[in-house]
Image (cartoon, rainbow, N blue to C red; front, side, top):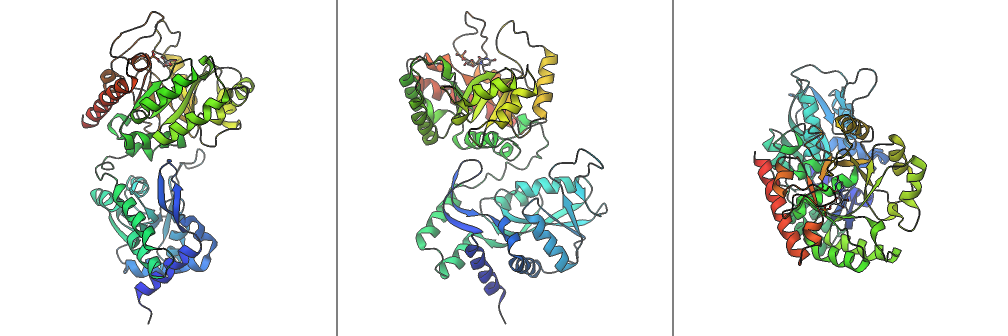
Length: 476
Ligand SMILES: O=c1ccn([C@@H]2O[C@H](COP(=O)(O)O)[C@@H](O)[C@H]2O)c(=O)[nH]1
């Protein structure tokens, strides 16, 4: 008789053969490098393999006697849960990621009763946050979720995080076990195994981060937790950079000579998460500036942000964003826009040619004294932002707005230690006050750094002050 381990090994090798598990150098959706990539969505194209997976999950889990329903974590695990449901005859419910905006607005489809015990099915677990999101929607309806069965545990801390939230994880495979099977079969070599092992050790997720539920006020959630709540991909990348580099400092590189811009990027690169430009103030601008600037951004892991403040009719914004000498859409992952002309600006940025991953910060308030923006305008700007969840990375503002939308980022300019204002209406707050009182996630510092004799030392100082204030905010 074939042992369970032998069946699991044969299944693992099949996964490798269909490229559901790959080894090499891959970029994750938040821009980090990983030596192993698992894409289990592909199993839907291999019905026999899907059937084997369902059989293995059922055999591994053992008795279903205490389970009333099963639920797959959307989307990859939905077909897996369907196969398990058919084979085990345990009814399934289905979770929507977003409530429909018509009809019943139900988040959980299917038949269930309050008090039902639900087994959660997932394909791959890293931090466990997707499982927790599904569990939250189920428990809100009175369904009990204490166990999950998953195909692959990436061993990056997810099991502990789930345990902290009262969920026991049963994993068919760990990354270690999978690599063992593949090495035995000579699909991968010792060096690959070493690389993945080092990667696992260096990318452990902090188990304390997901103790709080994602619906909490954004000011109480860590940037790492908020990575999973961001709907815009650049916002997710930015949260990840902030958490990894421990910086929420954006430098405003308002310099007018190309070499000064490049020198500044190099000097402050290690301390910032965002490099904000006004590209049209550069006197000697030539498109040749952009490649080295992007190279520095890549090397120091920060995001290029053109503070263009688009405000024209859609057609003109389309041209300003993607044409002309600056070709902003080809290099700036983030841009700013005014909401004054309404939807057209956002439709233009969304539809234009350029980088695939792009995000917009909408300006809802300004740091300028005597600004004509009023409360109604700010409110209307937030309503407009809600209509473009996948495009809007965040809001530029001066007060703690959108507290219940933790996937959005608050960017606050007007930060300096030395001055309270300049002679043209700019108003400054201290790093501590913008984070703790004004609700900023990312603080923009321009002249406080660029006018300093040693910008790298000033940047390090602002970085430390801003991060300390953010850490204090989390402990409140
Ligand atoms: O309300 C706003 C929106 C944008 N800014 C920009 O931030 C920097 C601030 O530079 P400092 O030298 O720190 O004053 C600058 O690029 C502005 O265009 C802002 O100040 N206020």
